[in-house]
Length: 447
Image (tube, rainbow, N blue to C red; front, side, top):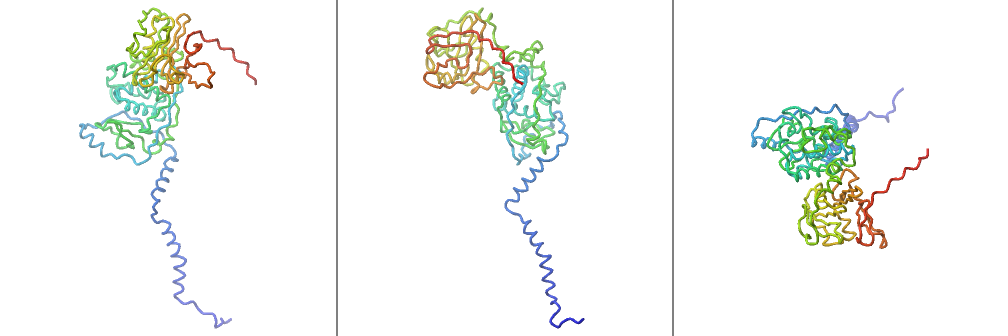
């Protein structure tokens, strides 16, 4: 069969056009898509972070004893300055709320307080940072599972312990009562959920005048005072790695027994409402045996037992006291005992400086701002000490006042601010203390 004359062969140049169309165009499109867009760096960073968080966890990194290079202070500072801070996000740690028994809580508070004092000194900011590192470690699988075990990890070694004060003899120095009380208050707040956000999930730190062997292998996060804070690189330094809960059974640490009643062997079986408060609470017999202080209208404005007396009620039963803003909250119980010693019926109301009423009687609103309340009736053996936990967090709810809001003008005066066993008539005219009513047996549950 012959081909019609109307059908012609394509011009040779057309083959080149078709080649460019089917081969060149896809390459051009691919190049366009791969161009460096303004947000490409952000996308690559987000993708890298997603891969980092989703990476399957390997075994936790080993926790090595702390060893430092033999450098003088100036050399160490120069070395540390060359290590850059990590550009990756540094999110704040989640709140840590201690969930153990009252005995375990008392031990954890004192272990944490000891770490704060001996690692950071009398520095509230540094103490908060140290407390955060300890609690980060408790949550991390690479470390022990209790607060005291984390703080005293490696204490059996002369050198190489995780916190150097536990093995270098520093515990031979005794902090002053005021320093110890403040450290315990900071520790109590940390165990009740207070977070120090600046250091994020840091698990390591050191002063800027030493260089540990691990310093350039971890992410350098921030500097607080003279301390540098670090976390592990990779998955083990990310928030998902800090998901482990603490365990019960805080060990007894004999090294701090002279500072802490909770770490004395004879107190291992204490199970009362707050071990720390129970240890500090004087017995009714001890209070009754004391000679009462001569306190009256002439004492108003004077410092009595560590607090300034604002006023007393007409019967000389209730004493209003103002304390300094930085006074340790645990010391308020001691003030109350000194004022109430030798008085069969006594009550102390405490306000921090700047919030105290000017005179008796306080208003309902002023009572709501009261920082601490103490009451006892030695005839019936009643004794209560309660803190305003909106101002001073307490891990044990049994130590907290009940905050009350008046519902109307006819409501009964709320002068007890949460102290059970107190009933009032009128406006502070009389005070009657009665033993708490017995709790009725629970009703049988239905299936």
